[in-house]
Structure formats: C-alpha cells, structure tokens
Length: 144
Image 1 (cartoon, rainbow, N blue to C red):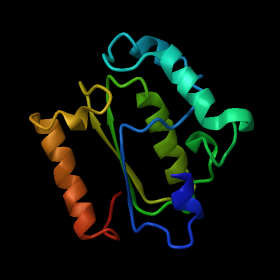
Image 2: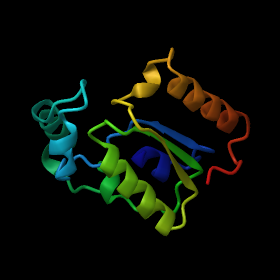
Image 3: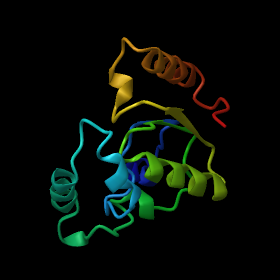
Image 4: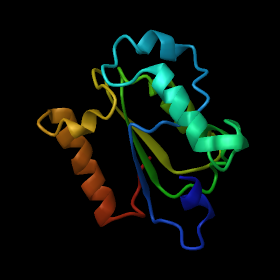
C-alpha cells in the first residue's frame, strides 16, 4: 500500500483482502480475537513484522499502513472477517481513511476468519469477489 501511495502512476483502486494494517500489533482486541482466528498467532506475526521493518521500526510510515497518511488513497475496498485478529485494526483504518477524505468502504463477514475470501465455496467469499469484479470493471466507481 505504501508503494501505491508513492508511485508516479498510482493504481485506480485498491482491494485489501484481510489486510494486516498495523504492524505494531498493539490493539488489545487482538488478544481476544486470537482464540477465534484459526490461522494467525501473535508470536509469528511479531517476528514477521520485525523482519519486514528491520532497523526502520514498526512506526515507520512508509512500511506500516496504520502510520501512513491516507487522504490520497484511491477508491479502496477492505474485506475483513469478524473473527480475524486484524478486524479492529481494519475498522480503525477505514474510519481514519474516511475522516481524511479517502473513498473507502469496509465489507465484513461476521463469522469470517483471516482471509475468509479464500474459502471460495462460501456465500461470503462469492459476494466479496462479486464486489471485487465490479470494482475492477469500474475502478473509479463509488466504493462508499
């Protein structure tokens, strides 16, 4: 996402599927949600985050979406499951992006786990990809 915000030719739209939006993992809700998310564990995520940012640190705005300015985001759809440990971070991210004036929309699946859209046989995943298809056909269409 940082690259999309800095590129000379920016994308017409962004689709974020169960994104990890705050590398710091400091939201207390993660501890509550981890019991319901079968796919992610905090120690592995912490190690991955440290490897990703290196010496630059978890607060580097060019690497951590939670620290990036969001006003210039292109139309963005964020898909997040209600059982995903990143759910609350996604809600905060979308709220902040909207407050900064970005055209952003959060699509949730109440019982969805991390990357629930990969469970293509479920109605929630099919509905998500129908929206992705619509956005790809009309990237400047309304997402909010």
